[in-house]
Length: 327
Image 1 (cartoon, rainbow, N blue to C red):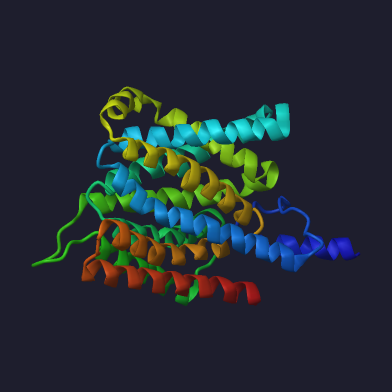
Image 2 (cartoon, rainbow, N blue to C red):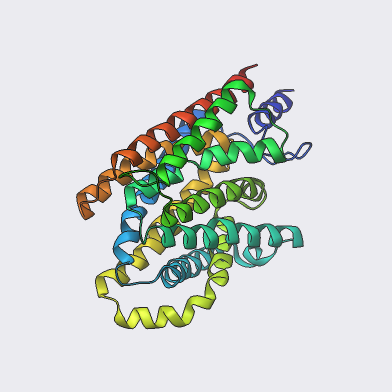
C-alpha cells in the first residue's frame, strides 16, 4: 500500500506534463531532503551557466558568424557528451526505439539547433541582458502549449499573466527613442524563447524513459547535425578568429551546453516542467550583471520595464499552476 500511495503522489506531481495513463516519473529517493538539495544545486548550476552564456555569445560573435558558432558549440557538446554516455552505458547508449529516436531528433532540432541559431542571430544586435529578459517569456509559451496540447486550464489569473507577458514582450522587441520600432534581433531571440518552450514539452517524457545523460548527449548530436551545413563557414571563421574567441566558443560548448543542459535535464526529470521553468526568473539578473561587468552593456529603460512585466506575468501564471495543484 505504501508503494502504491507513493506512486500516486508522484504521478500527481507530474500531472500536466506527461501523457494521461503513462507513468514516467522515477521512484522517489530514500532521502527527500538530499534529493531536494541535489535538484536545487542542478537548477542553480544550469541557471548560472546559461545566464553567463549570453555574455559569452556576445564576445564570441565578434569573430564568428552565428551559424558557425552554433556548430562549434554543438560539435563540442555532442562529441563530449556522446563519449561520456557511451563510456557509462556502453551499447545501451545507442539502442532506442523508433519513437525515441524521433523524439531525440525533434529535441535536438528545437532545443539546440533552432534555439542556438535564433538566439545567436538575435545577439548580433541585441545586448546580452535584454536577450536574457526576452528568454524569460519562455514559461508563458510553455503555459500556452500546455493549454493546447494537454488541455490544461489557465483560469482568469493565468490569462491575465499571459496578456501581461505578451505586453512585456512587445516592450522588449521594441526600441526606445521617439516612438516604437520593431527590432529584428529581438524577434530572433523571441523565436528562441518559443523554441525553448516547445523543447520542454518534448524533453520531459524522454528524460523519464532514457535519463538525463542520454537525452543530453543525443540532443547535442542531433543539434550538431542540423547545423552541419555551416561547416564551411566554421572553417573560415576558425582561421580568422582570435584564440580567445575560439576558446570562448569551446567553453560555451562544454559549460552552458554540455554541463548546463545535463544539470537542467537532471532537475527537469524530477520536477514538473512548469515548476522547473520558474528557475528561469533568476537567469536575467545574473545575465544583466555579467554583461555589465564584462562587456559594459546596459539595457535601456524600456527593456528593463518590459523584462519586469514579463517576470511579473510569469509569476502570475505560476501562481495559477500552484493554485490548481492545491485544489
